[in-house]
Length: 100
Image (cartoon, rainbow, N blue to C red; front, top):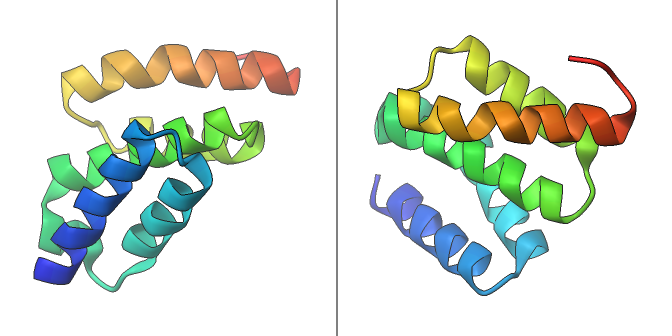
């Protein structure tokens, strides 16, 4: 868990400084880590997935954003994450030319 937690911290720092590509790589590694959801807990893992969508949106990766947020929202995330995810998903779908 300590390594995953450090990676989460580094990914948040990368997002804050506008390094969306770097954050995306870190977040992809966290998501792909064995048992990451169990190690972090559902709410923290949901936040990691949301942050991955944010990083993807900043890089114009609309398909990645739409898939990430669709999967996230299907998992019944905490209300505060869902409230932020729905508009971002709508924006990604609009940019990709797909209806909701």
